[in-house]
Length: 200
Image 1: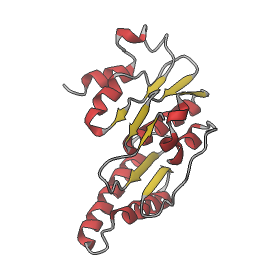
Image 2: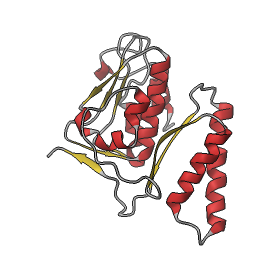
Image 3: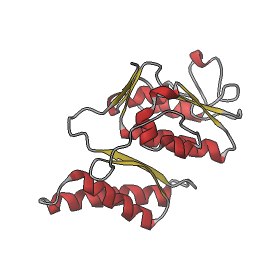
């Protein structure tokens, strides 16, 4: 089954390159230079998300990062679990993570971001990482994402998207068993290509 290996790793069985199992290694969330839906399987397979040892590290690629919103939302959800477990999160190659910082990832990780970023207006462009814990925040984030779609002239399509988002978020809140709720992140890539943080 395609998802079996990833599921096994989340339960605590990891490949030999980690040098041990979940009982002996620190939790790690390593983002590749391209974190897209096309390679999401490798994102699961190459990481040790949870461990019984204290401490946790999130690592960005040392040269450049192509991060799609789902990867940032996953990182925020992972960070919330680590914080709840009492772990302090360390960051590697944080200078390559300005896009992640603009999307508010480090605020959710309780990690300061010491580098300068130029913030652009959010409205109609992107929704930074948002934690959803109740019906009010579900409605709010759906409204924010709706504004990205520019579907004012296609109310039927907009209503369908809003319904799907509502069902997805409510399923997380009602059935995941997580005290952290859901994490949402979105961007309208008008050029078709997500931004990259490059080494100059």
